[in-house]
Length: 211
Image (cartoon, rainbow, N blue to C red; front, top):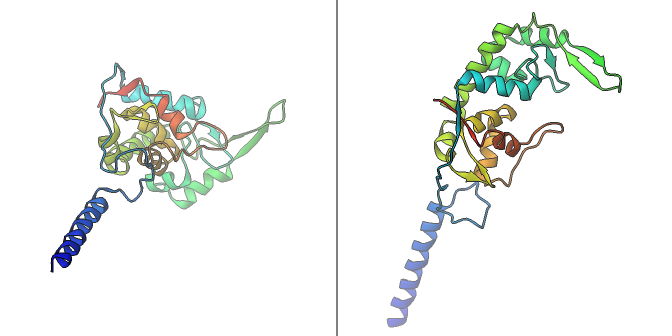
């Protein structure tokens, strides 16, 4: 009887430990260096604060050098390099998006590099400015709302995380931002040409947007 009670006690303890492990372990976490239940540590740092207009200007410089008619062979277009999926969600029809693509023109530099442009009448500047305001609002209030609340003010992979940095990195796709932060920097999407998610976050680690 004594042995049976000991065995039952061991089983009860094992089940309790296992249950606690399953509750605390995020299914997407693969970093064994951090405690499974650990929350990101918030720290304070001196920041430069900017308004949203200045944020959009900085992002536009990264995306297109602030040119409205710039296109990419991956079919992102305009001052903020909007993708087809984003344009459709923004409210453009399939026919309108196709009209943008049909207007593509290719110019070659003296070194033979292709440069792509499109007719801005198919995606005019006023729509592009309205697009970036809509896009950032969607990122902040829907797709990255919880990520912003969780990570702003923390450090991930030696990068201090700001709201401005997350919004800047969202130009590479909000899913890629989530993957980077939730993996503690292990999953770092990098386009064939351009900055990685970590680079985009680091560009604004000393800059914050006034909310």
